[in-house]
Amino acid sequence: MDSAIAMTLAGSEVVLDGSTIDSFRTGLRGELLGGDAADYNAARAVWNGMIDKRPALIVRCLGAADVIKAVNFAREYGLLLSVRGGGHSVAGTALCDGGVMIDLSLMRGIRVDPVNRIARAEPGLTWNELDHETLAFGLATTGGTVSSTGIAGLTLGGGLGWQMARYGLTCDNLLSADIVTADGRLLTASASQHEDLFWALRGGGGNFGIATSFEYQLYPMESTIVGGMMLYPMEQARDVLQFYRGYTQNAPDDLTAFAGFLTTPRAQRSGDHRCLVRSP
Image (tube, rainbow, N blue to C red; front, side, top):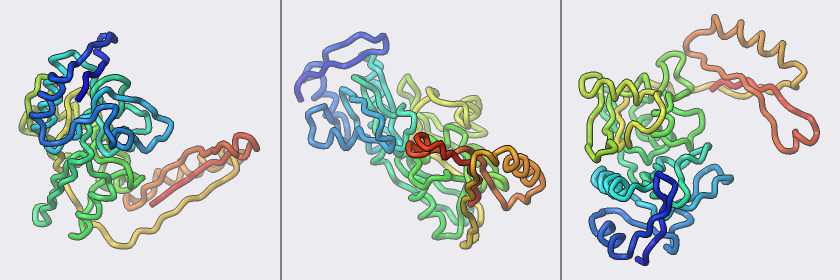
């Protein structure tokens, strides 16, 4: 690979020569992509099409060893670093301009233990993919409300989902996580190992490390789910939300509901904004 100009954490630029990049690539099991690679644009794409950032290098990891290698490389040269999991990334934090993007989307392994009701899953999976495997055994955990959301970002952000009224947030059902820390160590965080890190991972936000696997508690899941969406004109929002507040205070745990406001570019032009109430 030719040399590359990369961005450091300090905001300055550094030149990575071709031999340095080739040496880095040799130690990887996955792929290393530069800006001229055929798969570069596809690898940097995320669900939110408004995000258009160009990392200097994309490391497409196939396992924890690749993640450790990438973290050590970025630390050695003081490079800006971002992490892409399932690729939903509404806020665009999976990408960085000029830095190194660690792409976990190829790490999609999952193993379900139906006896102990536990699933161990890698961070490149989406909730649709995880549910597909667990539901084969009639099991599930609290996941996202959008099937294309990655399991990693949702779990580490807390995790609102359709089963949370009965079983809690996604992070409440996280039993353990394997984490690569900034110094390149691989740690297992759980209620009995690295307890402070485990506390931080369960909804504390980012920058505690890079998760390379998650272990979830599963629960029996019925095959029939009733749900839908109800839309009301914005002028009825006060009445709708007052009813929603009162109704959900006494609703059974089997019901999960969300209320919010919905608009579109067309609605912005016409003024036709809506109050939204959803249930699974």
